Image (cartoon, rainbow, N blue to C red; front, side, top):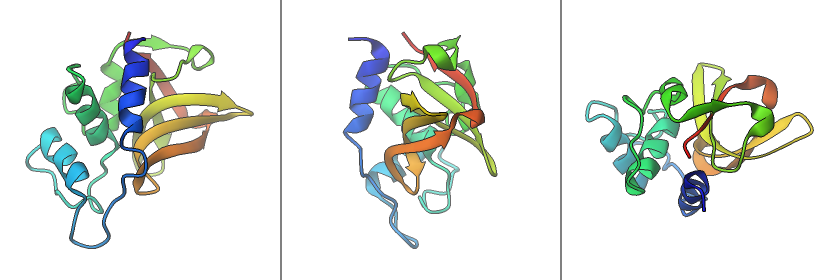
Length: 142
């Protein structure tokens, strides 16, 4: 099994993990935020946590996350660049979005859309669809 597939399967264990509304925070998301930087607001409804979860998953598998992994754009520095047309399940995808960047794991592509497994997608860990035009980079960690 490839490293990317191991990462994908590990991330699936958190599928459905959700933010808690208001000042409370989900303990696992709070852990990911704290691991990323102790100065980040631990309130999961205030801090963008997609990169934090990616860093937690990497760390839990003994992989080295990128520096300042709470910044989604920094994930462009992990592994090697591959074309979207060559993407495999578990590749790291950095996307443009309103207000900044987003990072998640490639699941599949179909009909101009990419399906990504990631954190902070509609305030939870899930597989969501995105227009592939917003994909900036795909990175393979194997």
